[in-house]
Length: 570
Ligand SMILES: Cc1cc2nc3c(=O)[nH]c(=O)nc-3n(C[C@H](O)[C@H](O)[C@H](O)COP(=O)(O)OP(=O)(O)OC[C@H]3O[C@@H](n4cnc5c(N)ncnc54)[C@H](O)[C@@H]3O)c2cc1C
Image (cartoon, rainbow, N blue to C red; front, side, top):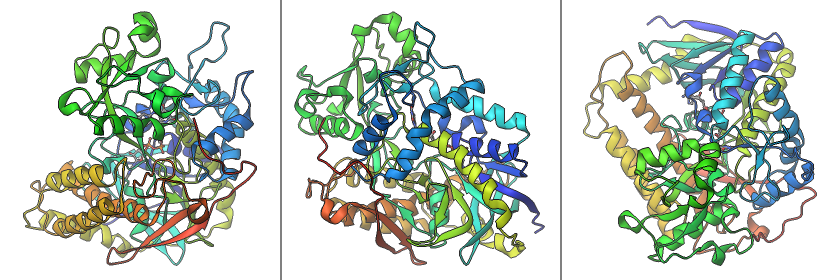
């Protein structure tokens, strides 16, 4: 088969906020950059973000407080050098995107309005109604496009070109006709987003299947802190579709079946605006102890009726629409039913603050970068605060773009060989021709159900070991897969099977990291080890997968700083 080799200075995989911001920066500095994305850029999950983006902008706020809130929210696992960089650049990042055309909601005096979010000492989230992500994504995509960045959408990247600690391109196929191509470059950046699709109830787009992580892991590269998956307190009952934290920020109250405002028990000071891990565990506990509402008593009430129609329509119009469409409940007139939903990936590809990808604790891979939700730079540590990740994606996307531009002259160009596409071609051939009995949909369902059950909000040694066994079983059964569509045109059967393979791989990292972490910290809650254990676990997990799929762990120091670890109370 003829396989074209396309040569560029830089290849970026992913066109969400992080990918677009990096691409614009690189193009502006005169580099030849190409963005590959399996979706149209504007369909990236960044566009679904509702609530806001943080910056200490107002007179009453300051950067140090933003840093402190972020480090405390992270349960002290965040690297404080990364937090300092991001928080100190946040105001400038907002002004930068605003000058490029993002229209933020305003206060009466014309300044940018900011709403309170969980775990923040001040109202800090800048927003565009409840369509913040879409506003930001449209702006940065438009600006990257204006600069002349080349976007190739509906290209699925399935492998990297990697040898001896150096990356020099990617292997991809065109979703339209399944034709492969090699993209050969001096530098490659991944901005492929999050991995919460491994859980049954989740708020993520269908595309958030953690491809980038598993692609790296299959080359023996490490993944960091994968056990930390954030469960958001408010997904719509049943579907898990997100009802942004903005709903609580604007004054939403939570009630159980007895009409009790139960947050009084769990976080008497911050109440509904405690951080997400705290509120999620409170909701899950109310449900578990039989005080849930709705079908199977698997939800609690979120009441916004006291805000009145005018405020709801001004501040939360999308949320009202979502609850009406997917639950048939009108938040103007009645409380709506919500439940805990898998939402955000704190773990990911280990990078330093300039986006260089780690090969191990000491070394970095030449020519390989990552930013946004797929990366773990670690600004969120064990728990992300709401409205900090749009900031992360925008700021680090741009910053890593600059960092690549600086490095580029010192990176040598390695010629790609056509045989390097074989790994992807063999995978495609196997999936298209294997005549087994298992279906992608069934295996994915069992993966998502069991992950939610055994590696979800509450975890124990027993549930995690059970999950490890389940994943082994699913991986074995995956070898016996059969896909029905054998065609070459928009073969979504094939794509979903490749994505399932990725999900099975990174799910094993979540479980393995969680088994070993015998403590509770941030989003990782062990019922058999309910306390945080700084003596043994104030450290990042680095995990590696071998050819047989076995995972080994090592640990890396947290970059501490001026904020000493304290008990986390709200
Ligand atoms: C419903 C929802 C609401 C949210 N609300 C907020 C909020 O209010 N505030 C906040 O701070 N954060 C919020 N977040 C989190 C935040 O939106 C994300 O962390 C952030 O937008 C991620 O940006 P990204 O650029 O890293 O990735 P994404 O925007 O997810 O983009 C990933 C890109 O990678 C591409 N890609 C992936 N795999 C491949 C592959 N194999 N081949 C080719 N391309 C690939 C995709 O096509 C896509 O373009 C929310 C998240 C969700 C799910």
